[in-house]
Amino acid sequence: MASTTTTILPKDNIKLRSTIHQKLIESGEKERLKVLLKSKLVEGGWRDEVKIACREYIKNNQNENFKIEDLIALITPIAKKKVPPQVKADLIKRIRKFLGPNIQNHHHHIHIQSNTPNSNHH
Image (cartoon, rainbow, N blue to C red):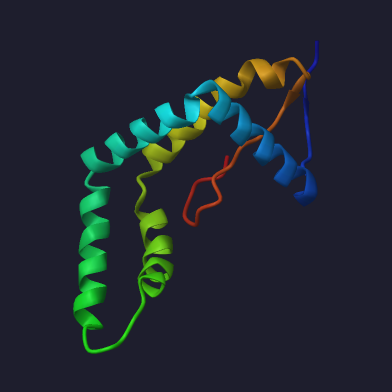
């Protein structure tokens, strides 16, 4: 049977993400992926890099009255950019593998791409 590529509209994308998220939670796969991701990020030094960025921000703004939300808003995009590409690729590969049987049953391939800047879209 031939497979087709599905074009996902923004409205459909939200529904699809919700469905995928629900399947990951129900199966326990989300928790397994979180543990794996945390381990890879710690091993790769990502966690330490983010801590350093946070400390520098606090040090440079210690005379200002800033909120934790300010720190999170500033650090989140930096932290996302620092995630090693191989970690992103591995996570996407594992999600695709998990979804494989579900997607194959519908004879469609849905392309999952990272939404983070500086990620390689193939």
